Image (cartoon, rainbow, N blue to C red):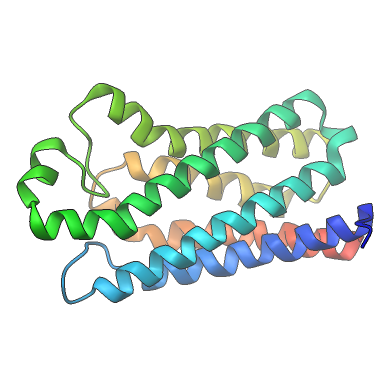
Length: 206
């Protein structure tokens, strides 16, 4: 089957909507900390979020392709950084969702001594850089792509601002104090509104 430009844009639109839905469901289900009692919800929440990041890759690719001529080099760099950040995020979520609960159950002292908890800071500087690189690059990539979309006036400002502000909050969220991280559902919802809105825009255009 030949994939035409319109079909790709249509697929991207549905992928962006799926991202918003899956990410929001994931954060709603996802407990703040892993315990023996909530292990199933912990894993299911991570699965939803990881699936959301995978559909996000498809959606952002289609979003970029549909507006590539208008958003120029800044948009291209932003798109590439977003893809890298999503790959890094998936790796981090795989660790925290499927490996971390097993390690902390058997060797909690290892997690505590090295700072390997989902919301903590690793002691080793190299691991710390890698640990937070996904979040930081996520914010930078969306900032560049969002600014490029706003400058090119590809869409109305409101959905792009939700997309941009939501992504900045999601990216900076792991760097904020532990108390603030309890509001992850609200943060993800802002991003979800923006990305679903842009998905609807793409579907309408296609």
